[in-house]
Length: 49
Image 1 (cartoon, rainbow, N blue to C red):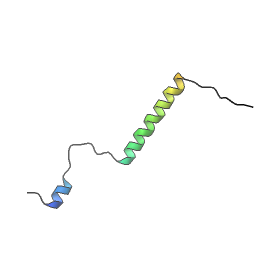
Image 2: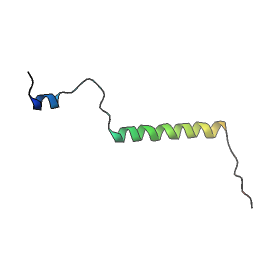
Image 3: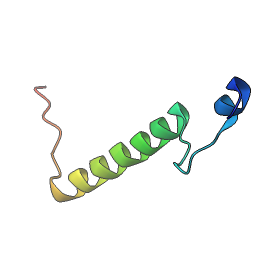
Image 4: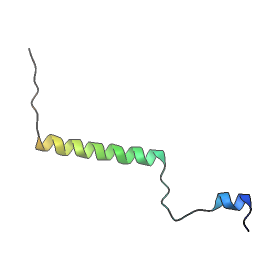
């Protein structure tokens, strides 16, 4: 039988990802999608002056 402390210290085989990691991955993904979108669909500036 494991004690309460030992149960809390058990690490599984899953990858440990923090919130910062998700933010960095999301930022890189958004930038890449925007870059591809800008290359495939270049939009001109529509100034009303």
